[in-house]
Image (cartoon, rainbow, N blue to C red; front, side):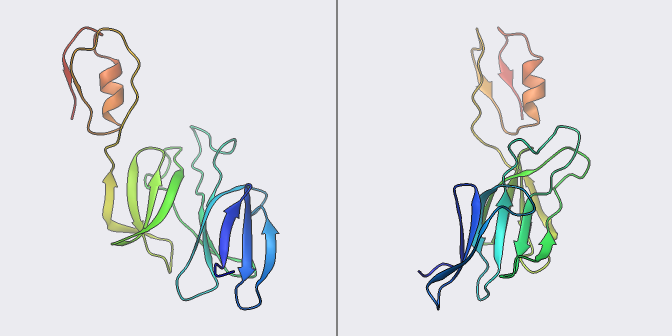
Length: 162
């Protein structure tokens, strides 16, 4: 056993690699766990709480937390746009540090020590979108916010949004 934490079956598993034993397994604050990543050089774990069934369009769900090995919370990361009903859907270590990606298509760099958003690195993430429609001849979508504009366009028009 070489990992200190991981997500398994909707639960957080925290382990002691030196002893080769599991310290604890369960939900975090009554919420399932979607993903867990060890924080380097510590026994801490950064956790993405499962938003399914918890998030609402009218209330933010700040679901990225850093926990100590004793399960106490070090920090909870704020969502990129407070008051937007947002939540995170992925977390990962990147070449620029620790990254988190929100439902509203924002990618942010989080300070792994404090959980605060690095204000110099908040960006809208262009992605692949599945659009179901009839008669769309040409389409360019560069951000999630452009979907609203696209949906208002006539189904036979040439749409370039960006």
